[in-house]
Length: 257
Ligand code: NDP
Ligand code: KAL
Image 1 (cartoon, rainbow, N blue to C red):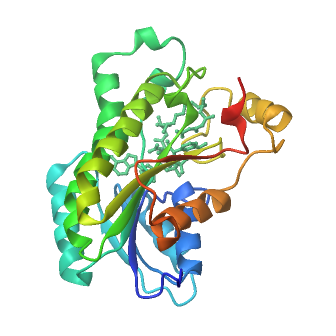
Image 2 (image 1 turned 180 degrees about the horizontal axis):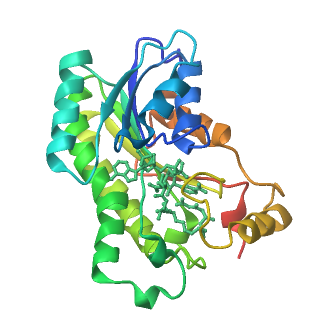
């Protein structure tokens, strides 16, 4: 079997800058020969994304603005992608957001608006995006989302995002069940902490990574590249029998009691 992604097209959602996990995924897919399509929330980071993508040799990428809280934007984006490329073979959903004030102190203080916002962007968006992209996967395909251990266990400061990730994990499984009959697989990668723009200035990120360097089986944190290569596995035929799965790419930290 040939595991090259030559002749295949993948949508990558959520590159903000070179530290983004989505960028690690984009590089792995590019290295395997895939054609890439990028979406970004708004113009704030679009030039940065375009500059980054221009460093990928021979990559004839397409770019679309898509705020996942806007149903019309999601529908229009995938209609446009259908017009521009026709069939796609997979999608990486690397999107999450919660208000800063909800990522500190006690979870019990989360407001209704803050709870709904975190779930809207971080969990429901996978439903909206999957519904819009699955019809473009006429040859079958893969959808991958990014989750975190804080959805399985209580992790200090992760708060409402942990509850949104629990919802995302279940959302991924229900989508896998619905879309499997069309040859579309849906999986999640539970990444260990990586210093990205999202992680910046929130909680005590340094103490989280220090604990992982001391205690994780591999005694180190993971990289965007390692997450990217697992996404390549999940989006290629290497994983053709895998759906509804959460793969931890976290140096083994999750196995500790
Ligand atoms: P980044 O800050 O690099 O990426 C977050 C992305 O979310 C940004 O590109 C941002 O878009 C996008 N986003 C936020 N709101 C919206 C919206 N309304 N519509 C569309 N896009 C939106 O951080 P990461 O790479 O760390 O995050 C990617 C995923 O990985 C997230 O799901 C995160 O929870 C998960 N994760 C991260 C871990 C880590 O340690 N970093 C660990 C485990 C999971 P824009 O830039 O255009 O605003
Ligand atoms: C326990 C950990 C420490 C950090 C706590 C919470 C992290 C939550 C992630 C969430 C996605 C962060 C935000 O929503 C940040 C947002 O309020 C402000 N930032 C922004 O608006 C920037 C500019 C944009 C690009 O960010 C987004 N998201 O749009 C968790 C650590 C150890 C692991 C992490 C970081 C997990 C994760 O899910 O990201």
